Image 1 (spheres, helix red, strand yellow):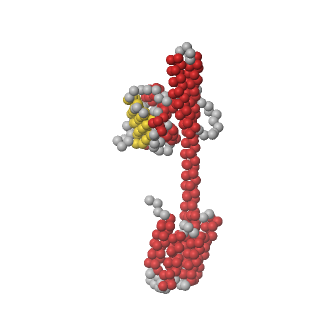
Image 2 (cartoon, rainbow, N blue to C red):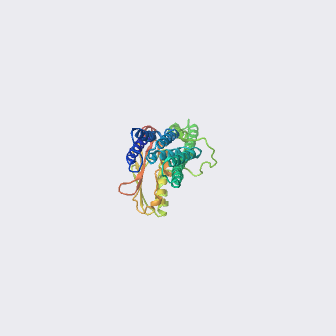
Image 3 (cartoon, rainbow, N blue to C red):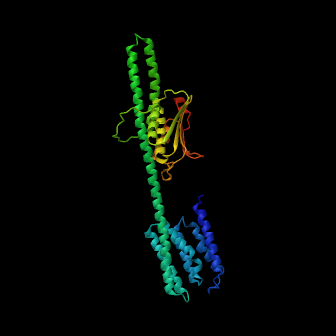
Length: 384
């Protein structure tokens, strides 16, 4: 659970103040004057500002070093208040560029050397080594922390951009497929309109049937067109539409045979009365099954897969599961792959729901539910 910066810094300030007070009580044993009320006040003034180090790092650093220098000038043990300046230098190095943080580290070195000069019996060689070594190491830690944070933010931006690009590309591909579906509908309308016109007077029954077909097909075409417009993006695309017709559920058997030939035992089960569905719905179900079986081929070639279709009154339920045998751990799919993004986008487009994840008893499952009518789709709750 993340802690708010002010709360964390306040806790650190309290801890540093406590440590400094306890260390100050050892002053007499170390040959330094005992802390009096003024000394304790300076200890608190040198450590308490650390609570605001994230909000005003430069101001806190200057105040802490000023108090520390005054504390040393009054003859108190310099070691007592060394921790707060160290943390202040680290904070500035972690939050500010080197042109700002390097002079701050130099300020700490200067105060450290000043403390050695005003202290009786101080070994200046040791003091000089500490004055150079401690600030340098602390500044380096802060600089690395700053660079790591910058790289993490850059990586997050790149990941977000890549995810947005993948979603846009997938939606563009879906839109092209929907374009073909709408074109198919319009071709049917055109043919039926011509037939109705030809037999309008000679065969009213045939003309009536053609007009009924036009009515139903035009409704489906409008629904597909609305879906296409929701995902279409203004972008240049020189691929063109595929020449082959869009696949549907009737071709699932062919897909299953191809996967079997690839070495995966696949079983196809169909429940309910098969019926003709809107081409876009069939295409969505086909692509989800295709992607799920492709993942089995890639990541669990040794497992057995089961593809189930359930034709219900207002919905089509599709399930692709595998038993998890022969899984290649290094290739197990995660929830952010390009193929999984495509599945979710398709389900969302058609008002369906999809769940993708491991099974409790082992294996992996993809379960899709698609409404088979515009009324059912309007009642859907989107993709999960």
